[in-house]
Length: 64
Image (tube, rainbow, N blue to C red):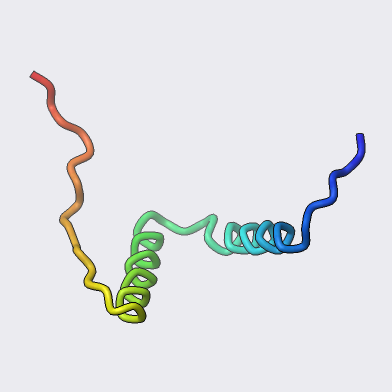
């Protein structure tokens, strides 16, 4: 089987994703949430957006 050559940009994206996965694979759910909150806040400030924060959503509803 021959290996398909991928464009340089796609290769770079794969390398970045692999590197981020290695850095974050052992993060707890709390660490992931804190990171996403921090990144969201940075983008909101950078682009003049207002963040809407909600309490933890109720994921399951009782039927009946």
